[in-house]
Length: 436
Ligand SMILES: *Cc1c(COP(=O)(O)O)cnc(C)c1O
Image (cartoon, rainbow, N blue to C red; front, side, top):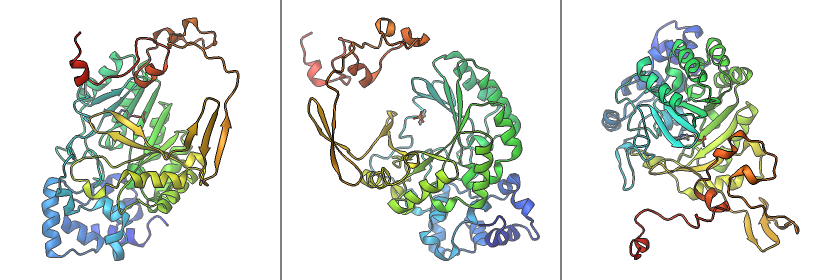
């Protein structure tokens, strides 16, 4: 696909007559002309809804607003928009107003796990830092749908300073994940300021940025932005392609700039009904990602957020897709399929079963072809006592942090610490009946 192909030119000229490719490729022009209403959407794309449809859509937008970049709108196949994966991610659906049992506004408890405004501290060594409240496009499947369009703002430096302060005061945090909204909605100047502040904290080893700009507004990835980011390596960037159709020449160009800038690139895909819930589409997607130097990172089961019920699939669909990827294509093209646990339990990987059975000295496995095989375990493996306290261990790890290590959760059950035989939920009935 060329840049400034016909659909792009048509939309550009409907926005303003005699628009040029340099307007189109200016990300600020794209933002200024972002589609916010049904009428604007119809006018620019040429798609026409019935009066009834419009009525329903307008009601939906009152709850969950619309925002589509002209660029992303230009990818919609106007003649078959009802089945179009780009249309479905961009345009509202009145099914968003359906709220089912078990659905929640904040299923991942991001707000209750927030020690200070903007920070979600869930895992031991890393934090999520919401540095922007806005996006260029409002993905219809957004897990933070509760917040979309609420009150659009870019936090001030004073507000961001609270998050930076939290990271500075918590030496356990070695990985800061910038998210939002989209962090690349911030101005270059503010990104520079923020990264400079974070990377000057001695215990921050890496900074990660989660952005959908390469997919919905690839022109945001300017040479200037890349130059700024380069000053703060190691910076890892995760993007969000959901369908192979999104890898256009503009998107590839943005991704190439980032890869050439030396940023390891990952991709997070959400499994979405009628968009990408198909083993063949997903295989094509991961292969195209790898071809463009993006490593598929996570495949997400769609969260239990209110307004997403029509996008959700059974977990079995995800496992079926994983079955069709593992072994069938390059190992590094295979993402980890995860369910983000409702209530803030974090991401839980889910996989087909490959371990069929085992005895004291043999494991029975099956491969992707259905071949059943055995692996003979070593006869003379010497078990090492391990309570995760490295001071008595003969392995020459020489880890400075060794003496501060505390095993956690299931890891603790597996270590040789004799005081942890089981993990018991709070308020366990059986335990509360015990005498002492
Ligand atoms: C996903 C997520 C992270 C990062 O998890 P990784 O598995 O390290 O990618 C960190 N914090 C929160 C709250 C998250 O949701």
